[in-house]
Length: 112
Length: 114
Image (cartoon, rainbow over the protein chains, first blue to last red):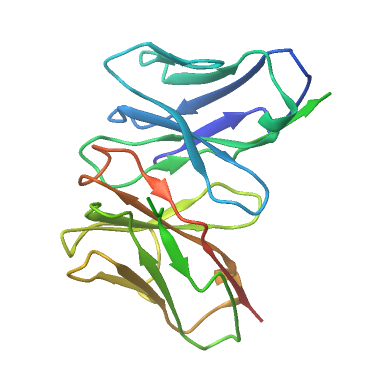
């Protein structure tokens, strides 16, 4: 069945360092890949998304890369700050379907 | 602009009871999706509604049902509650059908079944 694997489950970095979170999806029909940030007790917030017609997208300190052949996509956060600490979820879905399949989440801790 | 609003924020029910959760989408959004998030896991798709019609259903039992109203708000109903239904129920709205436009989540309803 459809599945999205996400690694690592926890990630601790020093402020200013980079953080990378990786996801693998199983459904080759997937063509939309959003990333959500969820702080404790709060709603998931969309931070960046990519569609399959591009291989990379950047928004300030955040970038996402996509390798459709390998069915991999990754989130890169540069110059991390303590306020980046949260749980990050990747997800995959088809533009012509109705649902997102989420990964299991990565708890990112940025130490000052 | 108001975001997606959900009510109630918290709810405690006992096994066998039923529950109704409510969601108001962002103004102008015609699509509403429901997701279940068990503690420590990613959200799982339950339903999507667009223009008052069910457009997608996840792998949940028939005890789960939903509907969308003419003003695009939505209700999620769960009958015969089980302990395993305890979770955060998230509603998301989007401008277009399916994943043609990004999903914006509400703060969720935390349901506890005892």
